Image (tube, rainbow, N blue to C red; front, side):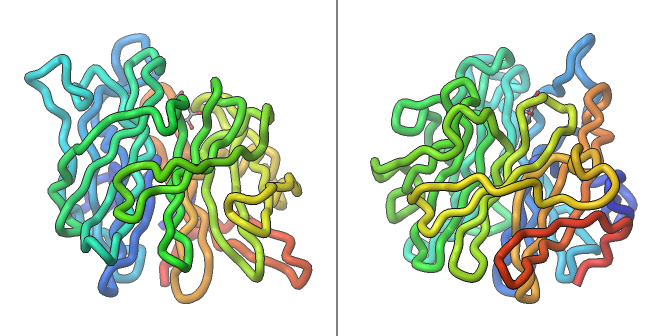
Length: 302
Ligand code: GAL
């Protein structure tokens, strides 16, 4: 697969899983993301909500479409899932205690003023997911967001808040379907979004983009000794040509495969969002724990 371009599934159809995430469960990789398979709304840089799609693969290259795991609700304009709304960056984690798959996503009104989280659960990874609630976490605005499940199985919601000025890191309840109540801030007044989190060595790493809508900008990463500790801004981890515009992409998720960490990027095509591309790039760390991300023209999976 060519990084930065649109990718096709095993049936030859373009993959619609933008702003996505990858979950490994029972030896299978599940890729969830925004289905944007429609034309942009007239004179607009948005696509009506279609739903959250799911693809499965064993090698991260041959993807089979499993359909929409959470679908738009077309007949009720009041529904948070009505096509006229916004549903972005769905992330799914597995809760071993409840044996449920828990999805959090950015749910919004078309003007992005609702700025809330949607929480949905499913019994199986291929869904269907049931929307439980839509709320502002700890009464804070939420726009770009991700989930991070720590080694102790405690999970966190990490999101841009306060008009995208600051990142908030909020602890989830044991069943992952709500907020436990404690939270902390990172990159205060730095205007970062598209957060993706991982752990390496003895530190947590958070990759973020700047706030320029669908246009690419510089990735920066921060580190912290504790996920809810004090985060320190380090540098741009991207190297080589186009490193200052994240190789024309924007971060969406970090996942582990074969004991290596990989960064997923979206390559947004603002005027025709359904034609946006993807890439998956290996993340390297040197002996000092410095993060390095280099462009690779091909993604060959594992
Ligand atoms: C981006 C954000 C996307 C989407 C877009 C809307 O900055 O990362 O998820 O919200 O803005 O313009």
